[in-house]
Amino acid sequence: MARYGMALDYKNCIDCKACESACKEENGVLLGADKHRIWVGTKEVEGEFPFLSISSSGFVPSQCQHCEAAPCQEVCPTNATYYDENGVVRVDADKCILCTYCMNACPYDARYVDDRTMTVDKCNFCSDTRLARGETTTACQNTCPTKVRTFGDLDDPYSEISELLRRRDHYSLKAHLGTKPKLFYLT
Amino acid sequence: MSIKEFVASIPVNKVGFKDIFGYEKTPRNLILTVLTFGLLAMFAAGVGLYLLHGHHAYNVTREHPWGLLLAAYIFFVVSSTGLCIIGSLGDVFGFKDYELISKRAIFGSIVTILSGFAVILFEIGHPVTMVIYNVLTPGLTSAIWWMGTLYGLYLTFMIIEFVFLLKGDAKFAKYFGLVGLIIGLAAHSNLGAVFGFLNARPISNGVYFPMYFILTAFITGVFIAYLFMGFRYKLKFPERVKKMLTNLGKIQIFLLSFLAFFMTWKMLTDLYGGMPNRADVAHHILGSWTFWAEVILVIVIPLLVLLKDMGRSHVAMFYASFSGMAGIAFMRYNLIHDTQVKPLQMLKVYEYQLPPTWIHYSPSAAEWMISLGGIGLCITLYYLGTKFFNLDADEGHAEQKA
Image 1: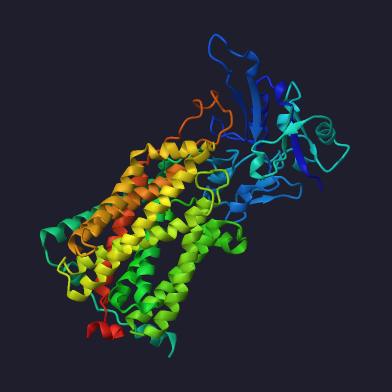
Image 2: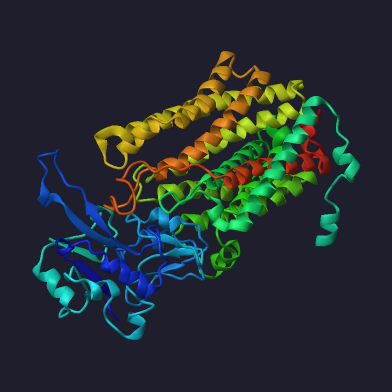
């Protein structure tokens, strides 16, 4: 089994939103700004006008961090949130009772309520779609024009992501919380 | 004795429709009746809105997923735990002065937790799924799982204890009461841990809330004890009730002082060092009127009344208990809101929302109606209890009658 993760060369991001569109299309995510599995954050420009630091402006794509010690999984009363065989943090909609404790517990604000099932949903690395079809990419990675995203098996030393992480400095979001995210931001 | 015989032996008053409405038609009673029916109608209307629109009837959002219904649920179960503690003083711990309120308090604990369950039933999106998968795939690391499971068990023990109290079997009431109390305290501290376990939200994370919940439950129990006794004796308290209320007042002075001490240190530790996501939230809390409403209604007013003559102004304390309970309602709302008020969103600046600021939430009509309706349920169940059961101290508390 694989241990999937994603490296983000976020400085390449041009905020074209192709990843968000591809994710919605691939996974049938409802339209609307509040229904999203992935998003592109915008860093505010630093400084006071007219002394603005243009280089401080940037875009930071984000999504579920697929933590190895996921707070959302720990707090779920019915084990609706679980780790699958590939280490992907998934939600079993049949077991979800919509207590929304996971939404409160997730430090990355990566979950939302799917209005069709009235259960909590989030990124699952395209496990129900692409991975289920035997592919080894995610829709967001596949569509990115500037190759921000690299998805792959962290346990495979020859995978592109493992090589990238060996070669490049990287950090995780809110690492101090000890959640061990599997999304890595390349510096 | 077979179960059927046992159930048949439980003393229950034969009450008809006429008896239920055959109360003294004083203006106060009539107002209370209209108020209660109004609250029940609100509950029905709120549930109707929920059934029509589902969770969309509520103003909860992705960023503020917990709203007034959860605060109302906590309000009721805190009351239940508090009444269980008050009821246990006499029947479990053997403090004779408190035996005269035991049966009433234990019945109150059953009524309040049932009202809490009625409210949370419409907050949980899939209650049937919950019942099934709580058993089939229990999340043992989840404070919510433990809280819910233990509260279910607690309710069972409270009912059994109440039955033995009705039958005047002090010995078995004590055993079941003790186990019920322990389970109730475990359940209630787990409810505190629901917030204490939130690593993502430093303002609530830690051991404070599990302990604070027990402390405030005891305080709530004392307030409700005053209300129970005030209504029972129409503010003309017999001597033995006065003695008990004075003692409860003294306990309340200690508890409220301790709460003030507790809250002060919580605030100071939140503010000290300016830790992000904690100190700024603490500043925000200190600047909110609901926080000061909580402090004034729960601590300042009751404490001033109690300190005036060390708990001997029972009538004044009856009225101060209304202030206390209103403050406890603010306390629960504040707890819910304050833990979610700081956005977690990372850099979703102008595409989806305004730059991160404080998250706003105001309950919808359906949330108000179901929450306030819970109070109507509580009053109705309690009133029916006073008709169907003898809630005063009886044969089981022979010494008190002497």
